[in-house]
Amino acid sequence: MKKFKLIPFLIIAFVLLAGVTGVVALSFLQEGIEDNVLVTVSGTGDLGNIDGDADETRFALPHGLCFDNNGNLIIFDTYNAGIKRSSDGSTETILGFSEAIDDFGFIMPGYFDGERADALFGRPTDGVYSSDGDLFIVDSVNNAIRILRGDRVYTFAGGTQGHADGRRGNAGFDNPMAIAIDSNNNLYVTDTFNHTIRMITPAGVVSTIAGSPGTRGYADGSAGAALFNDPSGIAVDNNGVIYVADTGNQVIRKIENGNVTTIAGIADPPEDDEEYSPAGYEDGPADSARFNSPHGLYRVNGVLLIADTGNHTIRALLADGNVTTVAGSGTPGDAEGIQGEGMMNKPTGLVYRNGVLYIADTLNNKIKAVLINVIGGEIA
Image (cartoon, rainbow, N blue to C red):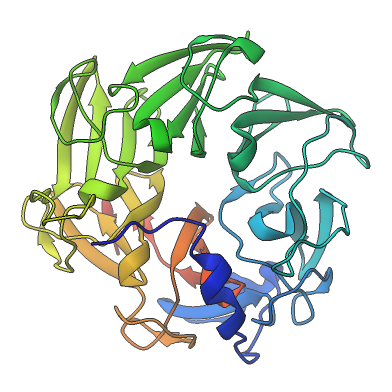
């Protein structure tokens, strides 16, 4: 299985100019749709960079999602080199105001710290808010973790390509992709091309907590001996257990008490001339389930929600150890509908709040949502 990265989007995106489907304002979701029906909540499907009402907004390969501390949906609009906020059916850019266009028709990546209106980003892929209201941003191609504090943007850690632990600018990353935060405001980052998991303290001290820098592979065991293959998604629960979408190995891993274990999926050896394990699509017991380039993760009420990107679905690892599909048909497309009929194209980021699962439907340039009841380790 070939690597699924952001870069191939450059070629694919131009032919995916999907038509408009029905759009539902975010505030109306729970009253306006039925359970388990996938709908579009923002984006026309046309590639672009337009703010406004949900049925007017245009994105360029949105990747990550999070909520701010006021409950607004934050969208990391990766190839617009910006970050948008969606509330009550209206979307506005809050960071990344450049209008310079690159040779591919996307907003040109930049790198500049400073006032909110002047700050420039490369390809922001994910972010989280701290309890203090700071927004931490994974600026992937700039190999940096940026921070919006008040009305200024700073580089919190990294900024150079490589692998180095240390404080703030002394640290190095290689295409970090996703970020999670624990109750103590420690950050956890998938350092994708270094094949490692990094931790950043509130003081900006970066350390490697799992994986071998620069070594692609698959091995469970102690965190220092474990191997990953382009880890791309990450989540942390209230007990400090870390969950990782090990994209190239087609599995979901867990880091707990200094040990790494595989909790779902099968990591068969890569075939000749391939870097990724063979992909598949299979629900059922976790140790026989199969994935295709899983990316985004979100842990809620004992359930781990998984963006199974290459299968164009959202899967769930339940508390009973079974994997099930909760959205998507398993084939690429753009359609609303009940489970099995609703369709997505390379979903990557996801978040869940108040019974609503929000999804970055990346190659459709849309944000979609579905009402599901996650409770007690199950989906009711």
